[in-house]
Length: 445
Image (tube, rainbow, N blue to C red; front, side, top):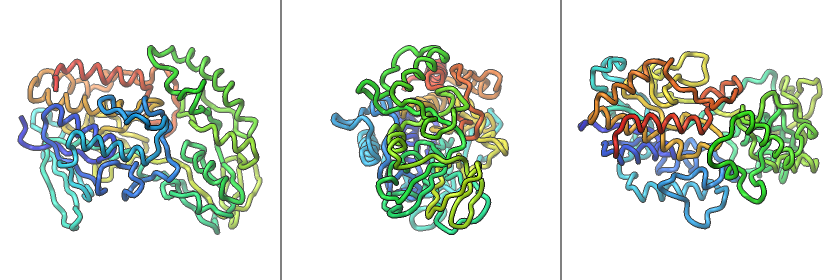
């Protein structure tokens, strides 16, 4: 067994899943976390948390939780960030994960020792970090699991023109009282943007929502049950599921174009749907209005693509996030410039550097934290196989090195070719592929 510990960067759900699976397979590890405790972005007071007071899960509790650690009885169907923080802390308590973390510690650099592309040499990595005392330290590790999340680095577009009011990204938004009496424009109708519209209508003088494309809206409840609990079991073929679910959604949400949204340029599930029917409720009540894409900022207002102009006091950029691994050279992740995500085997294993893994760089409707847990299980099983069954590990490594052998993770869906969709997969196809690779390694905890 290796004498060097593995590094786990992050103590949110993906980091905890990585730590737990290394523990399950008897592998030594050390965790690094900028905040003072576990929870990741679900700790609203953490340094890089991007959640806001009204934030809740958009997937239901039972489809999101870790299988080995169900949420307590009485937890709401769609828990708040407070419920989730308590949940992750109870997970860390149950499995004794905190004692191996270095909290209040920021990772500044992760570098391989020697040639990271040489599979014959045992991988070694140096992690440099700064702790609470401000003194830089470096530690050598047998490998590194990057699990610092996907929702911490704001994607901030450079809008032309000048604005006299306040511009903020959703990453900086916490409470709706900041909108009191103000004219608010939210740019972008993702799930956070729609949440903020729903928050703002109770405080603002006016609320507009600027969009560049149409969306599919999914209610949280269908027939009195969380919507994502209705399609369990064997998945339907993509075209059948799209046809059936599209008709069902029209019954519950109607046609969003009647509120001013453009017709979607994609089929249902080919981009992440908006799990928020309250925004349609407020649009239908005249509490908010839909506007076209922004053409330019214009002093005390905004000019839209259709030539109309409206005055505003606050512009909220609900323009999403981008992957952010500032402590790593992009080449180590096989991440070409100008692309939205690294090219990793199963969204996990770098073909460019032995000993480098990413857990949590995956997005899919309904994949939940158990999907990330299964990513972490594969990493731990592979690392264990390197010691216990090198031939099995080598077979997987050969597959990692040959992108033509990588499985199709789309599940037959034609996803939008957007940067934010660069690491989007179909949950059923993805989890099947990850589980199959773990089973093929044949290494038990």
